Image (tube, rainbow, N blue to C red; front, side, top):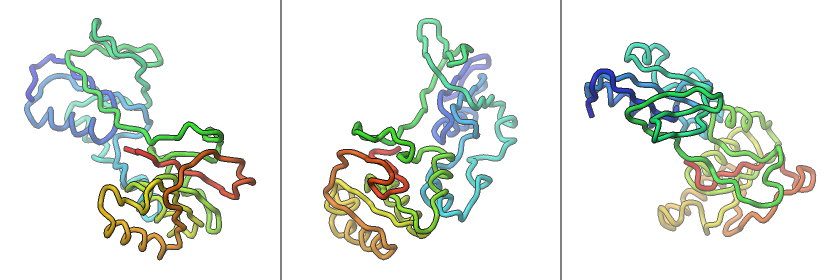
Length: 233
């Protein structure tokens, strides 16, 4: 949708959706000011590689950005990174940050994406329990060495990708799933069996139809890392 000159557009969220919205606005002839408020310190980047080639060490940070660094200036888009939005005031038409700065808007787009779900169980707040949502999360997971052990909780696309990538790094991986087989509810039993076969070929141990009740100490569980990937987005 085109916009008038002087119109103020604020996009909350520095992921692919926010970058795509800003790009589409300009492509449609939008002439207003566009500000992207990104919580992360990095410019919008591709997230799928975080559990694929980036996690396996086959690509680096330089391959992740959605566009080159000069794209934002070329399209007159004000990208502000490292900004945490704390409040949306519709009456005052302002977005306010945790640091107390306000950004006025005529239109605001919330493009914050989703977060992986960490189950509310004892031990879920331990240091060795994590999700994979950001670059730093993937880099932390990549810190595991051959022979280390990891429990991946959740057999969605991202969980299966993370389990496979870690196994390819020679980490001892166990995949815990609520399903009878990975992706069975979404893709059917035949495809689920094929996915399970691929994972098992990589020496991933699959625990089917299990629910995590608690997470003990690293020594108690003999697990170096627990990665919760329920409902990630």
